[in-house]
Length: 112
Image (tube, rainbow, N blue to C red; front, side):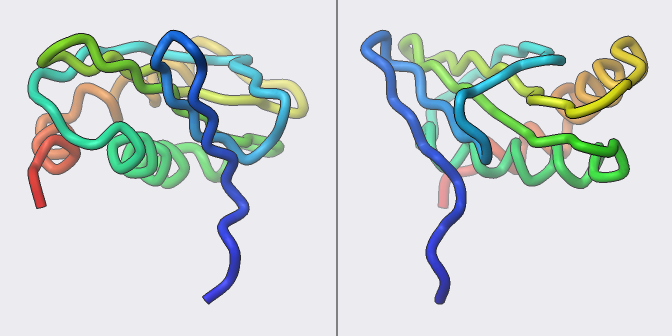
């Protein structure tokens, strides 16, 4: 199996960020709150996968997801860097649809 090409960064505030490119850039981003607890790394990768599926046609898009745990609440910031021109409102609306989809949220927070 090949080596992961994803950078996983934990900062001193307890936030975990998963990104392909360094330095981390959020040219577009949407935030949400998830109730319950799960692994931050697992959650970040699941959100990143669904984000990529939704925006893979956006030329030059490199997803980034940041997860912070605050008790029984997970704060998620999803978005990333875009190399080129893009419609911010339309892209952020797509990200919001991914983050607010009930089936996605249930799958992300399911314990394995």
